[in-house]
Every structure is written in C-alpha cells, then in structure tokens.
Length: 465
Image (cartoon, rainbow, N blue to C red; front, side, top):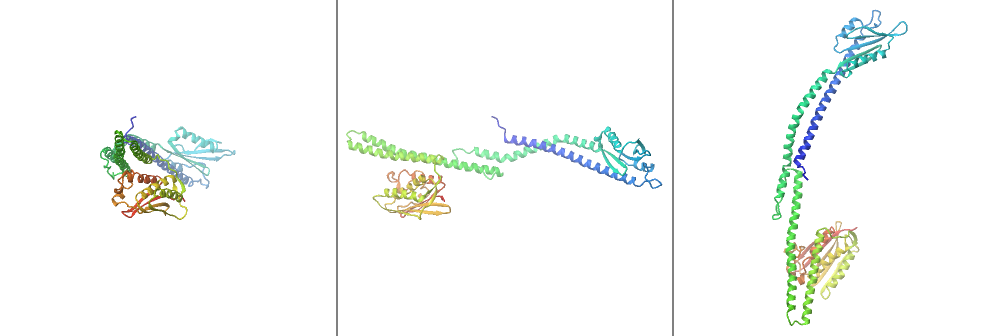
C-alpha cells in the first residue's frame, strides 16, 4: 500500500485551503462592495425623495389651496433632478369619484384615468418598472398626504463595477494561488526539516552502538517531544540489551557449573568397583544439585514473567502484621539450632494494599538472607508507616554488605564477596525477585548496611486504609 508522504499531504491540504480562502475572500469583497453600493443607492434615493417632498410643500394656488397637480415651475425644478421620478395624486371629482394625475420627468401633469384608485395607479407604476427590468433599478416610495412619490435609481453603474471586480478576481486568483502554493511548499519543507533530521539520526542508531541518542532540542517543540520519547525508548532498549547480555552470560555460567558437576559425578560413579554406598552418595549429591538448578530455573522464569507483565498479582487490602507472623514462624525454623533471636515490633493491625502471598515471598527472601548471613545475633521485623505507605524493616546483626556491593545487591546473580559459595549464597536471584515483586505491587525496597554490624532491608507498600 503506497501511502502519501507527509510533505505531499500537507502541501495538497494547504493548497486546497489557499484556493478556498482566496475564493471566499473574493466573494466576500464582491458581496461587501455590492452591499455598500446598494446602501449608497438607497441613501441617494431617500435624499431625492426628501427634496421632492420639500418642493411639494412650497407650491399652492393663488387662493391658498394646493393645486390639483404641480404647476410648470415645480415640474421644471423636478425635471432638473438626476434620478427618474413619478408623482401621483388622487383628486375628488364632482360626481364623487376620484381622478388620478401623475407628474414624471418626461410628461408633467397628465391624468392617468378618471375614477382610478391610488392602489390601481401604484400597480400600474410597479408594472411599468418591472417591464424595464426591476432588478436593474431600486425604487423608493413615500406617501405624502394625497401624493405618492416614486423615485427610481439604476443599479447598472455599480453592477458593472462589481462585474469588473469579479473579472479581475478571476484573472488574478490562479496567479495568487500559484504563489501561495509555492510559499506553502517551502514553508512545509522548512517545518518538516526537524522531522527529517530526527528520522535520519534515529536510522543511524543500530544495535552495535545503543549509546547514541537523537539530538535535542530540534527547533520544534513537537519534534523535540518525539525525539525525547525516542531517546527514552532507546535507553530502555539499551538497558534491556545490556541486561539480556548480562543475563545470558550469567545464566550460561550458572548453568555450566551444575552441568560440569553432573558430568564429574557421573564419570566418578561409572568407574568400576564403586560400592553401593558410594553410588548412593553420588546420586544424593546429584539430586541436591538438580534441586538447586531447578529452583534457579524457576526463579529465572518468574523474573521473565514479571518483567514481561505476565505475572498475576492480587491488589487487595490485607493485614501486614499477619503476614509478618507467618514469616516469623518460618524464620524461627530456619534459625533452629543457631544462636539467633527473632523479634517483631508492631503496634496492632496494619493494612497494606497488594498481594499477601507475594509479600510473604518477599519477606521470606529477606529473612532467609538475614538468617544466612548472621552467625549469632538478632533478626528483627519492624512495622513502619510513612506518607500513605506501610513498610516492613528486616534487620540483622550479621556480616553486613560492603559499600561497593550495595548498588548491585539487587542485580541478577550478584553475590557479595562473603557469599561466593553456591552452598552459602544461593544463585543470587532472591533479592532480584524481591525487588521485582515489590515494584509490581507499587512498592519498593531499600537497603542500608554496615560491614560487620549487619544490614537493614525495608519493604514499602501502599497503605490499604
């Protein structure tokens, strides 16, 4: 499927917008010109009607009565006006009827018909104007006593002007649209230049050099925001790539050790003249190593599921103190036969929000480490509260952690100098799993330690109340 380029799409869209805008502007100009011309014509007709009305009031016959029709002097003055006009007047007759006269610029003082009503005369006047093309004229009408004044003004002058204006607009519109289209194309290209640079820089980054980043700022806020998102994505890919490389190397090393051990045990058992007791001892060692390897593989699968958001965790309120009591019982069993005191400090029920089973698993990992690295002393569970969070501190008086190991203590397969032995330190995945499970519940784990004095791990979870 061939999709249009953004440059082509924007240029075409802006081109259509320019055409519509220019066309609408031309129509608006013509419409406004016509409206202004019509208003001017109307004001001119009103002025002419005012003049005619004032002249009608100046003339009367010698007896002081108004004449039936305007005398010649009035007709001469009216004929001097520029606009065509017509004045009608209904005069009573001796028989009770009415005679209607009219005065126009072409034929003053002529009787229309005997007995015709003013309405009939008005209809005749309107019909006469319509015959000449009413759209070409604007007619002003005013009733002044017995008189009806009609003044007609031609629309032709401004119609011709509007026609010329429209012709000019039609002639110039293509040229204006062409210039606007070129300006639009150059503007779009300039606006898309940061996009092009960002795309080129992104394409130049490959898996062999994930330390490179897209240059910011780009000169355009939206592109800079996109570049920042790309940089964050590359950073996550870099971390994942580094973690994958480290995981592959560490897992290969950790799996190579038990496989080497299995091979050695099998080769030793296959030597002739091995006693049954020696065979049982070899098989027992292999079985224990298989259990450790199986546990390590299960932990790796758990970490993979958690990092891929495929681990189902409950999110519900639960009593954190009850979970601590369960962990305390297991910890006492782990410390059996050793001079270790298990203590819990809490003030009643404390409600946390999360998964009680996974929280128990976290605390068991922390307690197991505390017991493992404490020859004699105390392992303490302490319930904490802070700004909408509840926590559990697991403290011991063991060997502690060296400062150079504190930053890496939660990394996969990392074991401190004191715990290099697999028999003593495990596979180095317990704290990694604990931190992952805490973060999946919206919590966190921190650690403080002093070599020779002990360590203190603190698990924080959202408060459930």
